[in-house]
Image (cartoon, rainbow, N blue to C red; front, side):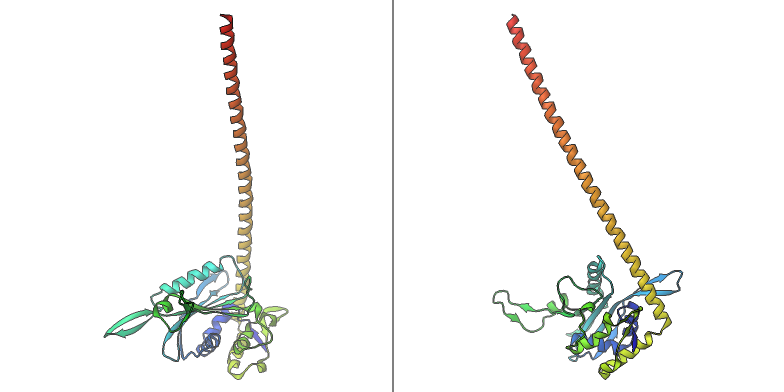
Length: 305
């Protein structure tokens, strides 16, 4: 079965617009049940001319409720290609989520309503490999320790929950063909080894190899593969990524040129400094010579007297 490639923002957005599928994907990645989900898409759009459709830069955000009734804020970033500015962009987005007034929940204490910060969980889908870690799915979990005894501290603390966060990093190129866990099996729909040789927008999957609970997601992606608007937007995303890559290469060349010019200027400055030192030595030698000549003249005048 052919499915639309979900690493593209427009396809991922289409996927997450289905609340049940979004809940399935998030709960499978987190490894815990999500009883309720309220999506808060934070997408940014870019209108492409003369094309009359929009490219989405998706930063997905949702409020989830756990079985114990508590809430969390889940943010998802999908980055198909690697750029030098990725980390700073992720940091800016994460900072915005921490300070956003809507990312709170209200509790009643002593007859008063008090707003508290939602704990944040970040999920990153990367279309490229990290520099050192090769695990396909990485969980970064907060743990608190007594620094004196080294003992791990159990229990939850609002201060820590509000100011730190867990994270999940999914390295799409590291996804394994042999699925050892349920989350790996579900995320195999992102496996770029399944790309059709003549079209990277399309992946080939065997629907029968997936459990029934995942097949709704597979079928939605299958329908998306023939959606003209989605296909056109994937083309536009490719063009945009190519333009960004060209811009980054141009900036890199400019930085190299500036660096080389800086070296030339530095070498020139060093040469001028050496020249100034030589002139200074020459001036000192001339001063010494003048002093010697003056002293000889004085001696000659005394001898003549």
